[in-house]
Amino acid sequence: MSTSKPKVPVLAGLDIGSTKVCFVIGTVNADGKIEVAGVGTAPNTGMRQGVVVNIEATTDSIKKAKEEAELMSGYAVSDVWVGVSGTHISSFDSKGMVAIKNREVTASEIERVIEAAKAVAVPTDRTVLHVLPREFKVDGQDGITDPIGMSGVRLEANVHIVTGGQSAINNTVKCVEKAGLKVAGLVLGQLAAAKAVISPDEQNLGVCVIDMGGGACQSLYFSNGSVAHSSITPVGGQHFTHDIAVGLRTPQFAAEELKKKYGCAMASMVNENETIEVEGVGGRKSRVIPRKDLADVIEARAEETLNLLANDVRMSGLLPLMGSGIVLTGGASQLDGLVEMGEFIFDIPVRRGAPRGIGGLTEVVKSGEFAVAVGLLLYGLAQRKDLGLHQPQEVNLGESIDGFTKKIKDFFGQIF
Ligand SMILES: Nc1ncnc2c1ncn2[C@@H]1O[C@H](COP(=O)(O)OP(=O)(O)OP(=O)(O)O)[C@@H](O)[C@H]1O
Ligand SMILES: [Mg+2]
Image 1 (cartoon, rainbow, N blue to C red):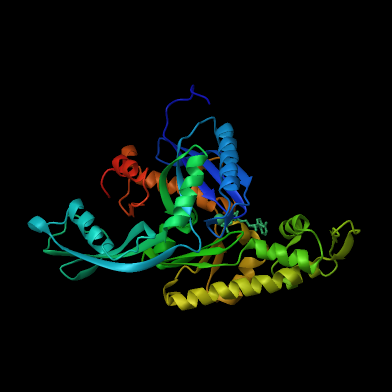
Image 2: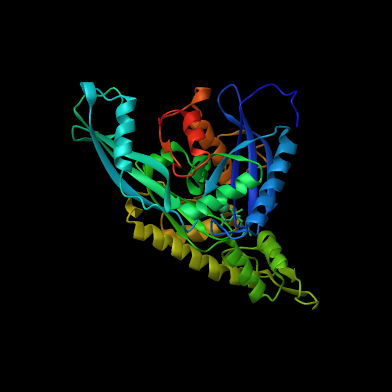
């Protein structure tokens, strides 16, 4: 790989999805902004709803995507930020309290109070991925976001802890390492996606980001600027494709193409006179059908999916706090008419989210399917104290994963 390029900080993000692996390489420019330098994608059949079901297939897809991104960017990378999500993730609130030494809050107090909040019983088969501070209290005074320098005797922290299943995470790490890479850090996929597609204003007003992938929809709720809840709804783009294949009696690959090219979530938005050609199964001749028939099939699934998601929002109890509404991202959010239908079903504002706040090859990563991979670069950058750009906002632990944890800790120093 090229060695003639000037030495600039290079970061890499890896999103291992149920339909495809996405590898993004970015550099950090003089303004401290990420510039996307290379992108590689490869279809993946070895992952299902965030859990590795085939190590070989996943490793191969990671290798392919990495090589493509390296070729495009001209940079070779060895460390990568990896997104994790899926059915094995769970998250909950916790509290911690410590006495403030010398009556002034310092970084070490924050570290201690976070440790105290983390000291809840996490079963041995789970790994703590994130400890996300929600608010601090100094001597009972609540609503504090940055207590450093404040005077008091007692510091409390309310945090949101995200954990993942140990074996699911180990298998993901195994695939990454078998592909010849080192894990720089593990990041909740929808947290990375949120970094890429929503603004701090939206976070402060309250927003629910939903990464609609091939196998599932992963939601992350922000209220008052911090993460309040995460969840998964096991329906994704592949279910839409399956319905089309069955409903229109066409092969899966043809159904996938029809969905992307002519699909629409609301049949009423489709012109009655428009027709499309549908390939037959098993050598049967293709047929010409109204495009509305395709939309009818999709509409049923879209309505069901959005209702499940809306139910999730209601069940979270956070609906009244979602001032900025819902942001849909991920590949499956690109379906025509989905936002329009979403506005009906959620009854709060809905928009589509695509990566922003980056430079370089923005055209290549402008769709929601790159949100997680691009967000991993942004997340990685925020953690890089060595670049002098670190914003204290969270702790990335990944403690019980042998092999690379110590390196991460050595690399990033102490938390915060
Ligand atoms: N234009 C489009 N219209 C409708 N669906 C689309 C479009 N583009 C992509 N999709 C769907 O998006 C899905 C892939 O999205 P994405 O790449 O975010 O998933 P993934 O990360 O592989 O899966 P997961 O996150 O569930 O593990 C596929 O099911 C694909 O059919
Ligand atoms: Mg995904």
